[in-house]
Image (cartoon, rainbow, N blue to C red; front, side, top):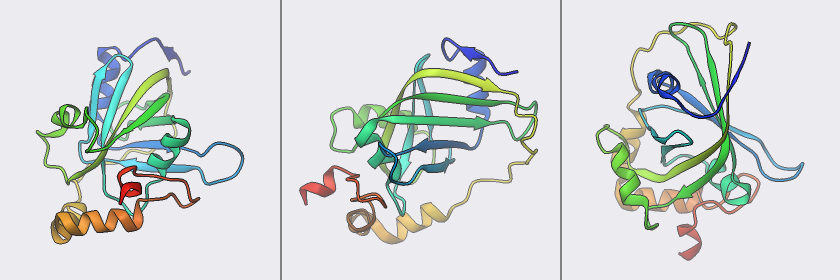
Length: 187
C-alpha cells in the first residue's frame, strides 16, 4: 500500500502544503533518553527543493528537537490527511538547527515572513534521505476550525527580554540534559 518516492514532486508538495498540522520525531543517540514527538502548526513549513524542507521553530517549554538534532541530526516528519482522501507521508532525514545568530537565518526566515507567526526561536532545515507514504486508512477525519492565538499572546506578554530569559531557563538543555540552544551557552 505504501510506496517510496525519489523526491518531493509537485503532487507531494501540494499534499504537504495542504496539511495544517504535521509531526516531528527525534531521539537522542543510544538506548537511553526520551524519544520526542512534537506537533507543528501555524503555517510554519517551507519547501526549499525536492529534498529540502524546513520549519519555523517557536519558543516552547522544551527544546528536545534542537538538542537531539545537535547530537545526531536524525529526524522524521510525518504528515497525515485529516480531511479529504486518506494518506500519510513520512520524510526521514538529517536536520540542522539554524539560530538567529547564524549567517543563513535571516535569508531562510524570509520564507515565513508572509505569515502571522510568533517570534522564531530557530529554523529547522531538513535534508531528506527517504520519502515514503502509507494509506492512512485508520486516520480519523477532522475539520480545521482555526489556529490558536495562545503562543502569540504569550510572546507578546513576555516581550523580547522576557522571551530571552524564558529560553535561558527552559531551552538551554533537553529533559535528558543534552545541550540545546547554542546561544544560551555563551551567556
